[in-house]
Every structure is written in structure tokens, then in C-alpha cells.
Image (cartoon, rainbow, N blue to C red):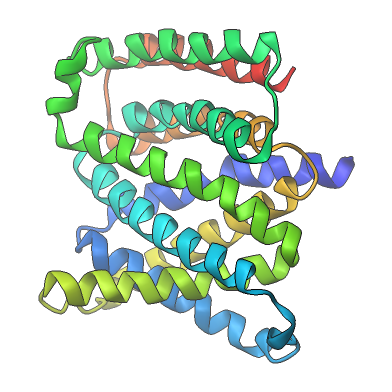
Length: 281
């Protein structure tokens, strides 16, 4: 139990750290995504030769390729949203992932949410109105006119579905192997997206190396801790725990990027976190 709690804490802090340095980078979201996965993949190479890859079923590889596509596309959308939007808005909105996770987990894994979980989902939706109001968009469908909001919700949908598939991969392999596949598939699909878009090559500048190091450290910690937690508790509940990172992201946005309307955003975030806690219960 203690190991699971530590993994959740690592997950709560590591994702906002990665997001903060992603926002600091002004380069292409596609290349930011590709370089991050590339460096993590290179770090995995010494370990992959210890695995007997011939023993995995066709089902495993199908899940790996589908999850890789969803994760890479979702991450690219998230990076672009973070670069053009506010961390203190986009962070709390990520709480919708627990709603997506509960619904998808119910449909595919037969994980049935409790009454508190359903109430929690409604609180997450209600709390988000304060976030949108603070952002000056208002709580209406017109909020989707903002590109950063559209990209963030696209990311939430794709990574929410990917989270459920990821649990399937973990059940068919292990925490470590699913992490290796996450890195390699993310690198592969990121490169495919770059080639398909015919994007001009964007090199890494010397002053960006430290940023990429922190992004890779944050993402690797985030994914390993995510896999560890998914192995032990329901996907929907795990995603609810992870939404506590909302407060961390909110503070990062205010402190490092001078984003405004802290009070209203904090109120909305707290309501959404209460919703996440109800989902946990």
C-alpha cells in the first residue's frame, strides 16, 4: 500500500513538472513530442534485450500499437495546447480524464463506478465552469472556439482511452515492459506524424537541452508511476487520484507564467478535486 501511495505522489508532481518545461519550449509541438520519446527510448535500449519478445500474443501487439497512436497523438495535442494556453486553465481541465476513464473502464473493463463516483463526475463538470469563467470564456459551448481548449479535450479523450488500453497491456506483460512499449511507440508515431505533416526540421538548441532533460525525467517518472498504480487499482480511481496534480499545475501557472484569476481557478480546481475524491470513494 505504501508503495502505491508513493507512486501516486510521484505521478501528481511529475506531470506538472513536465508540462511546465514543455510550455517553456517554443519549438514545434511535434518535435518536442518526438525528441522527448526519442531520448526516453534510447534510455530503454540496454534493458530490452533481457525480454523474450517472442512470447507475447497478437492481442498484446495490437493493444501496443493502438495505445501508442493514441498516446502520441494525445501528447502532441497536449503540448500544443500548453504552449498556446494557460497552465492554470488547462491543468484543471485535465480532471475530465477521470470522467473519461470511468466511462471507458466501465465499457471495456466492466469496472462499475459507485454512486459517489457518479456524483464526483458531476462535480468535476460543475467545477470546470469556474475555470472557464476565470479564463474569460464563460461556461458554454463557445469555449470550444478556443484552440487550446479544443486541443486539450482532444488530448483528454485520446489519453483517457489509452489509459484503459494501457492497463490491458500491463495485465498481458508487466509495468516495465509496458513502459518500454510506451516509449518506443511514442517515438515511432511521433516520427510518423512529423513525416506525414512534412514539417520543416527543428533542431534542438543548446539552451534547450536542460529543458528536454527535465521533460524526459518528468514524463518517465509519470508513466512508470502510472503503470505501477494501474497494476494495483482500477483505472478510473487511479485517474481520479492523479487529478490532485491540478493544484500543482495551478501554482506553476501562477508563479512561473504570471497567469491571473488565481482565486476563481483555485475554487474550481478544489470542486473538481472533491469530485475526484468522491470517485475514489
